[in-house]
Image (cartoon, rainbow over all chains, first blue to last red; front, side):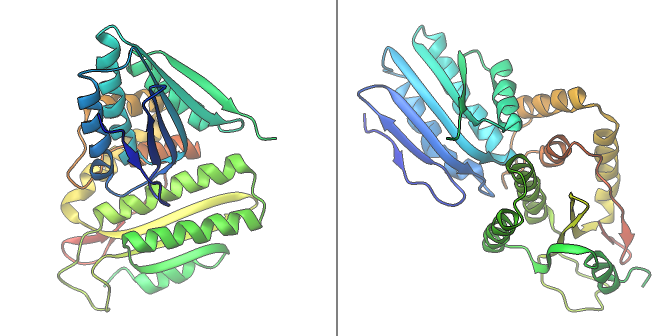
Length: 127
Length: 175
């Protein structure tokens, strides 16, 4: 299937898919006023992807900020991943946070407690 | 008229103000404010954890305004933009305060008051539970609002939310 590729803006993250390694990367800021509109292509893409997923799917969440409107859409994205995982495929969500950003770590843990997919919390250490 | 908007705004903007704005709250304006505040916070060298918290609270505050501003159709004695709101960010002894104001219909007051009082009564862990519950159980509105903004502001700031309703006209209050 066509890989998804969305350029980032000041209010929305870049979304990329690497089909060779099964890696979805979501990176940047996610603070649009209307997040449903922004996330719909990704949710739709994942729905298609879920029909024939790779044996192993990795999702790298590297968000600097996200607003509460995005938080629900991110949950929808994770629910799609949960379905892929439930169908006996390997799925892992790598949740990145900057070393001093406890709020972002906590946000990741909130999702981890709701979604049945393995999470890996990864601290980004600034040099 | 019992509530004087001009006076209210002037009083708010008296301290060590980082940014004060009154007027129409649009998507572009939100971009501009966020960019300006980010620069300013970098200039004053606020610690990066604090900077992120301020930025987050500011995003939610502005988007709350954006989604919930109501147009006042009556009793207007001053010329106001249709999506009129105010925002003041000030600082006192390293404590940052974000104040927003907008018109709300009198019918919404009970709901808002109950919601904020509820949020203010909760502990940190209870707020976390409330956030997760709303996240997992409530659908987004068509506008993209999700009932999480105020909860998130309380969580990120670690403070109680101060609020007041000022009577503006028969059916509208300034909040």
